[in-house]
Amino acid sequence: MREARLLGSDLRGGLHGSGGTAAARRIRRLLDADAVVLADLEGPAAQHGSLPPGSEAGALLDEVYARGEALRQPPLCAAPLLVADELAGCVIAAGEVAAEDLSEVAGLVAEALDHAELSGARARIAAADLRTLRAQISPHFLHNALAVIAAHIRSDPTRARGLLTDFADYLRYSFSTKGDYATVAAELQAIQTYLELQSARFDDRLEITVRMAPEILPVAIPFLVVQPIVENAVRHGLEKKAGRGHIGVSGYGEGTMCVIEIEDDGVGMDPELARAILAGSGPRSKGVGLANVDQRLRTVYGQEFGLLIETAPDHGTRVEARVPRYRRGVVAQ
Image 1 (tube, rainbow, N blue to C red):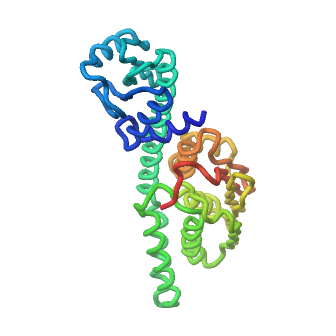
Image 2 (cartoon, rainbow, N blue to C red; image 1 turned 90 degrees about the vertical axis):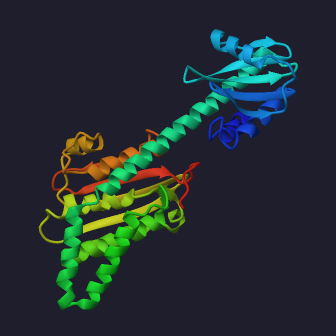
Image 3 (cartoon, helix red, strand yellow; image 1 turned 135 degrees about the vertical axis):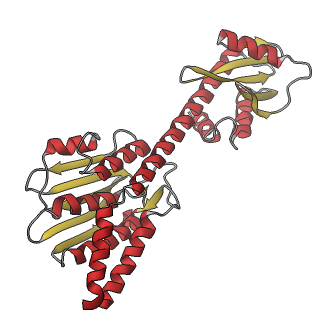
């Protein structure tokens, strides 16, 4: 099991990645082989040690690919790499190596390559979803924020300057290209900037409560996860409510989990509509950001993770995001 994990680490970048030679070295040591070659369908990708002069590796590869099983033709032994039931390459070992042993190792290599491909696909999907979210930064909010700043220029120029700084910080963070992940602390700062702008727009009718446990502030989470939820609460929950409104943002650690909750006392919605929004089948004018965040959480952490929405008409909305506090590859930059 330990060697399987180490092979997975070596082959995170695939056969041609920087860890390919380390994987070949590890396999050579496991099999006590004279040499090991990892090949894809186009030829050798990584190698440790030298094959014996005159050995017919090419002919052996052709036969292994044709039969789809491990074969031994001294001094070589070769086993196919079947990734997701498709032929992806071959492992060749020189020396006194049994075909059964090489087949077992080839299975570990294929599993590592399958995980690497899945991780890469997840990363590409998450990055595409993040680009989509950035492209959906609400023109409605941008217009209102600039209108609020303009309204304060004469009546309260000091506050107007502060709001303009908040607006610049909001744009800088929302369109940041530093990476796909941020700390909870960074997301919290972006939320507070956003809420300052909204509070001015609501003529200070918006009550804000933010409570974050210090131990989760360094936790890395996907970029722009919390802010779209807060924006959705303001736009679809509180804008349509008469009188004062309240929005609360809280976060805490629960064992190995980081829990973030956003709750408002706005107009709420039908629970069926909330489910449709998360499924991506709701109206495009409502909750597009929620569906995007839910999908990215599931892509990064797995299908068991995502947003939980509790809501009812005229009873506000509570959205919970529960993610692991530590996950390999999820690192804020």
